[in-house]
Length: 385
Length: 229
Image (cartoon, rainbow over all chains, first blue to last red; front, side, top):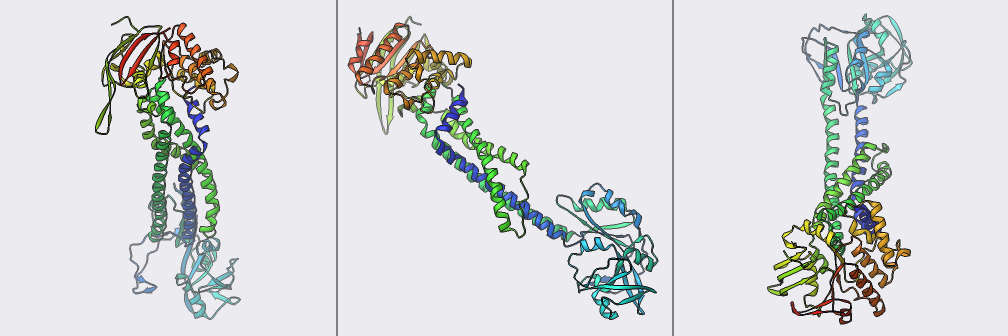
């Protein structure tokens, strides 16, 4: 027979009261778990959506000249001394420290070529990578699937009077037009797009790359750090983070985090108050018992230990039940509140945290009632007999 | 200091009640020797239960001294008095006051929880006492599965399990029929003959016959100090 037998005996005897006490913890913990699971899914959803907006890092050759182009209007005859990249060095991008954060790497070669006597912008790409980035591209016909096909930008198609199924001669080489892009409002409206290798051959730039667009998954990774790591590998490149996209991504995530933190603090506060009030009530109800304990020789610390042991057991129970309930609620709620949202699965680390939090909360909230019980004067308690 | 087991000097206790003060104990002086069976008798509100709680190191007097074994109880800290109660006193409360969610055996073991005894020793001592009061067969029952007399026996077993020299009993037969009350008083008398000093508070004059001495209390003062049977 030890002190814990008394605590467990009391829990067994006052089941309804103890369940009510644990209920405060269960609701608190399950709310936090549900909220975190929803926030996690929302964060992933937003990230996924934002990542579909395309590249967030652009790598271009370093130049001393400034571009005199705004909104597609070129206002100056600036001579570029372009130092292009070697295609064979592209693999270096995936050797940076944060390589796991690198998603799509889409290299391009750019240059001018003549079609039907008109100078047009030719862009060579790897279609698989390019289409992974430009998920918003819509087309008539189909995207090229071999090096003998090309894709026309909407403006080019109009100027050349060509469309899917036509054959065009680009600097004397015949290409089949497999498809035509619908207007995007971007630079591709004015370009003829074909496989990288074909473009390099037309433009006389074998093995050369004019620019690289990179999509980095930036959750928890500093985008500036990524650009610096890439720039280290390519001393002749200017690597720029498209901060607007990144910042909006981070802001959205931060906003959700702040929201869930605020609600969590509120719920924890209410839970702690509930536990304290219930535990205080329980101590008052047990005045008689505490009086007996003190009369037969229990010290203040013994009485406190009994109350705190009960709080610990209830805290652990509340933590487990709250975690299970919270995950269940998240599983049920997420598909209702997030379009195409799927519960991300049980986070065992969060489970451990829930247990610790619930136990700590229960102990902290029960400390004052335990102190009050310990300090109870046996003669006062016995007068209640 | 003295040869007496318990010595009480100039004891006084007043309670505040709103703006007025109520005198519960006033100028009491007496002693109790080792091995006595003392009955404190008096009407309800006479101060007898307050006196018992003061002797039991649970209720600080407003003035005066309570010495047990030459130890001034109210010179001790709260925690030292708790240790003193554990070692010196066994309490039999009015209406049994058993812990309802603990079995008979667990209730009896309760005072031993805070002693340094090993579990095995606790079990053996508690079981021996439970058998001594005739409840060996019912050791695993809960208090509400016992009769009033049996619950009183559990309360007595709990009071003696630590083998304290002094047993304090507050109206131990107040809730029992006369036959069961007689059995309980016989048990207390046996314990007294075995060496326990017993101080019992009662308003029932029939119980006086079991004690060696009676202290009559009225209005917080001692009215009579008489020898018993």
